[in-house]
Image (cartoon, rainbow, N blue to C red; front, side, top):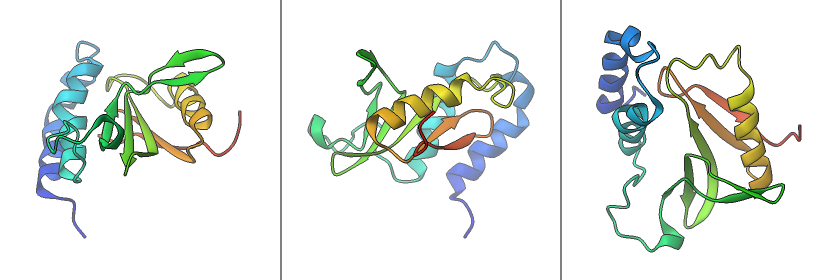
Length: 138
């Protein structure tokens, strides 16, 4: 099954301007607004709570709060179904070298492990970067 047209257009726009997006001047917030949010909207997630659900039942929580070692941390996105957490997404600007820098994956794994989630996503470059198996404790 082919990707939805909106996602194909996002990928094409990114590919057409990859040098500018990976230059270092393009930041995480821009990536979230221009690519990540539209990507998940195209997949049917209510990123902006346009349906007006109460806080407990929103599809997506931005900067969700979780406790790790007594400190509150905030994954960029928490995706939920019926109010139950399903996965986190941690956004990074496209220029972050995930293969050379394990910190973003480690950060996400700590978030997801602490919340009891088996899988989460580190986003970069081509809309989705890496799925992280968070069922294994580091």
